Length: 104
Image (cartoon, rainbow, N blue to C red; front, side):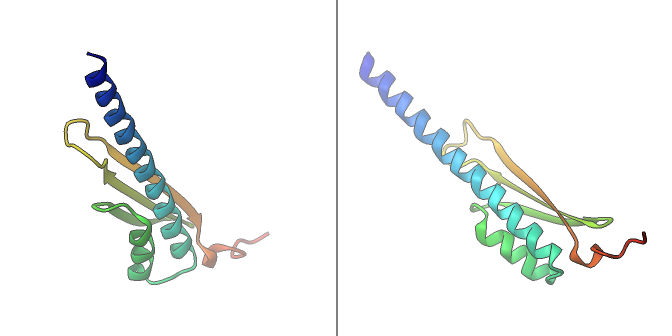
């Protein structure tokens, strides 16, 4: 009885570690995309920067809200479909072309 319980616990622990790793990749991808957008890189280059750090199957959205660039990365959790979660991260960066444009 104890061996199957340990196997299930070990599998759950491995799944949780894989999900945590994918969440960190989402955060890194959102940050990379926001930095690229803030530097006024072309949209394709910005999405490529985010996609290079994102986990497989991630959806990346990019938008500008005033002086801020917002990048959101959503990805399905790795592993079996039963405990599926949508992992997400968002990063915001001030556009460099907006720095110093305000009047004093």
